[in-house]
Length: 132
Image (tube, helix red, strand yellow):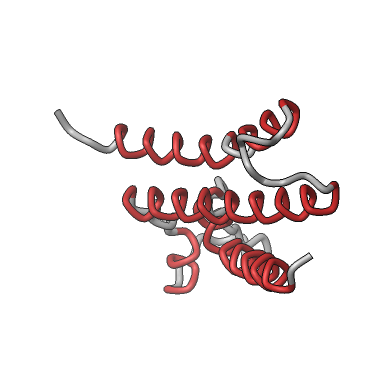
């Protein structure tokens, strides 16, 4: 196992973990809740803080959503390829499509599925936000 593969894998994992807060904000469906003050029975005018809490946050711009989906697809693909290379090295398989057995080729091509889903979602987001 090459040390450079482990360093690259570690760097990719840290980079993807650093992206989780942005992706959480992108995919979260939570709406802000209207907080009702039960301690006071009479209706009072809302303060600035309560008004800020009740304002729904603006949705993420479509181009930023597309960019984040593409970045996430690339990061997942790189992590998958590095892990595949590590496992193939440990099993003694040469990572060459001409010499790999059929099962290893199927596993290799299946690595494209998850990044493909993210790229497809990015394409759908792009198409949904275009005008005729």
